[in-house]
Length: 193
Image (cartoon, rainbow, N blue to C red):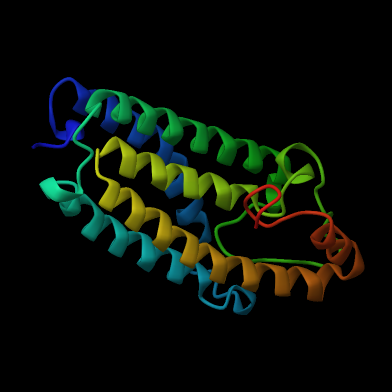
C-alpha cells in the first residue's frame, strides 16, 4: 500500500508541513557549518549522519506492507502531522528561550546564562525532545510503525551522545549553576529521562 505522503492530496499536506518544519533547521545548520569548535566533539556531524541514514532507510521502510499501520491510516497520518507540527513549535519555542545561545554546534562560555524559563523549567534539553517528536511525527505520517521506530531510536541515540557532549561543555564553562540545573530536571522526557 502506498504511504499517504505519496498520495494526493495527503502529499500536499505532509510535504508542506515538512518544508515548514525543516526550513529553519537548515538555516541554523548553515550558520553552524565550519565552526571547527572542539567542544562540539563532532556531535553535529553525528546527528547529521544519523538523521541521513535514518531517513534513507526509514522512507523505503514505509513501503513495506508488513511494517505499515493497516487500520486507521488517515487517523495515524493526521496524528503524525500533528506531532510533527507540535515538535516544531516546541523547537521554535526553545530557540526563542535560548536566543543567541541556541546554535547548531556545542558552544559554551563562562558568562553564559542558564535558561530556566519556558520548556527549560521542566527539561534540560527540550529542543531534543522536540527533535524526537518531529521524527516520530514523520514516521507516523509515513504510516509505518517500522519507520517510526527506526526514526525514534536513531534520533534518541544521536541526541544522547549530543547531550553528553553538551552537558560536559556547559559544566566545564558554567560550573555550579549548570550542575544545579541538571540536578533539578530530567533530560528529555518529564519524570522519566
